[in-house]
Length: 524
Image (cartoon, rainbow, N blue to C red; front, side):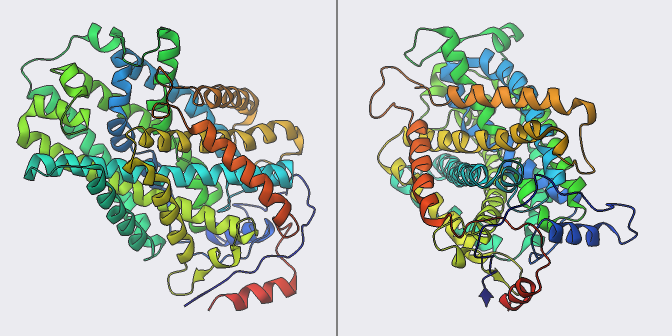
C-alpha cells in the first residue's frame, strides 16, 4: 500500500542559500547529517538511504552507458563526419562535459535532493527558474528512457536476426521495446537497494565489455584501418555541403552519450553522505566514460572492413555489421549480447533517475495529478506510481518510430535538447549568486567561476546546435523535431504555470509541526 506525501499548499519565500550544518564535525555520522540537511532544505526523509558512494557513481556511469550511446549512434556518426569527427569530437566534447559535470557537482553538494536541477534553480533563482528547469529536465529524462530502451530493442532485433533469422520490423521492434520498458518498471519497484546492486554490476559489465570488444577487434581481424584513416577520414552523407556544419552536427553522438549524469543528484536522498558522494559520482562517471568510450570508438573504427556495407547493413545496426565483418557471425552475436545487456542496465538506471525526478517535482505540486505521482510505498520506500508514469510516457514518445525511420533520431534529440540546457541553468544561477551561494563540502574553490563559465558557454552553444536540421533537403521525414519538442514543452509548462503557480513551491525548511505530522501520517 502507498500513500501521498503532502506538500505545503502555498508558495513560500526563502533565502538564496542556506548555511550547511557542521557536515563532518557534529559527531553524528554522515547519514544522520544528511537526513538533518534534507530537513533543513525543506523535506522530510521518506526514501530509503541505502545507496553507497560506489552505487551513486554507478548509476550515472550506467546512464551515460558508452555501450548504449556509442553503439546506438555509431551509424549516425558514420554519416555526419565519419571517423575523424567521431574520435576528435568525443575527445573535445568529453572535456567540455567534464567542466559541466564539475560545475554541476558543486551545486549538487550544496543541495543534495531528489529534485536536483530544478530545486537548485528554484533556490538560487526563484520559482520560475525552478519551474522551467524542472520541465526541461523531466523532458530530457523521459526522452532518455525512450532513446535508450528503443536502442536496446534495435540491437535485440539485430541479435535475433543473426541468431534465429528474425526479421526486425518496426512493429516487432516496438513490441521488444515495450517488453524492455516493462522489465525496467518491475525491477525498479523492488527498491533502491536492487537498483544499486544492478548498477554496481553494470559498471564492471561496461568496463569488461569494452575491454572484450576492443580486444577481440584488435586481435581477430586480419585487416585494420590505418591511424590516418581513423583520425582524419571525413565522411559526409547528410546532403549538406558545409563541412564545418556537418562536423558540428556530428557532435551529437558524443553529446547524447554524455547525458544523464544528473542521476547521481536525483538519487541523493537515497545515498549515504550524499553531499560528497553524489558530487563525486557525477564527476567520476564522466571521466571514466570519457576514457572507456574513446577506446570503444577507436576499436570499432580501426576494425571497419566495409564502410558502405556497414552503413547499409540488413541488421539495421551498423556496429553489428562491423562486428560480423571483423569477427564472424558467432563472434558478432556474442559481442552484441554484451552490448544489449549493457543497454538494459542503462535503461534500468535511467528509469530510476526519471522516477525520482517525477516524485520530487510532484512533491512540490508541479505536475498534473501530483498527489498520485508522489506516493511512496511503505514496504520498499520507492515512488511506485512515478516509476509507472516514467515508462508509460517514454513509450508514448517512441510510438512515432512505428511510422518513421527518423523518429528515433528525434527522440534522441528530445533527450539532448531537454536535459542539456537544464544542466546549465543552476550553474549560471550559482555564478550569478556570487558570494551569496553557500558551497557544500565538495566545491571547486577558486576554479569555480572559470569552470562554471566554460560550462555555461558550452551548453548555450550545443543547445542551439542541436536544434539545427541534420539532413538535407529538409523534409517531414528528415526534419529535426527537437526544436518542436522544446517549443511544445515550454508552451505547456507556461500554460500549466498559470494553473499550478498557486500550489507549486519548494519549502523553505522542514520544521513546521503540523506539516511534520501530515507527512508522517502520509506514509503507510
